[in-house]
Length: 112
Length: 114
Image (cartoon, rainbow over all chains, first blue to last red; front, side, top):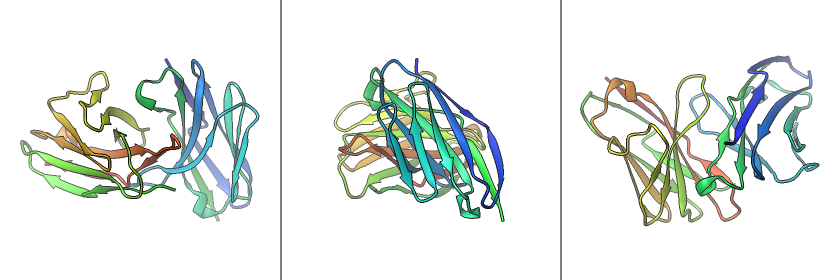
């Protein structure tokens, strides 16, 4: 069974204070690892897909990296508008119907 | 990225009534869509996988007779909550997979059962 654990559960940052979110996973063959951002009362917004260890992707102040056991989402010089819950999900090669397994999320609050 | 819409965004109903929620992929065709529910400050819980032209696949513990799913076309899936009760109040979110195997989510539907 695929499992995803995200840490920390919550993160308070000062504007400009860079930090990293962790997503540890166990999966029987990784088809893809996905990062989403979710604002309160809204659906998750797609950020990145990573497919193999060593892969990195960037978008504005966000950078996602992947190893064989975990992924990190680095937030560089965050701004208050980066406040959101960040969700990590994996899709294993044995996942029926392309299902995703989600972690519990990390709630990020960036204070001005 | 691809766009997925949901309607309605918010619904309030009386206990015992049925509520239908629509999920549409606006700019791509999706043979597979998913339905999730999310409780406050919790992550997404997959309820069922909706397949165009065939029966939905429900996750363990999800009542198929209570949560009816119909995937009528490559761009539309509907979730009907039958005989809704207050414990069914939740945030329901759908998603659709595009041809690149990336999953895009709708904006969610807030259901409140009185």
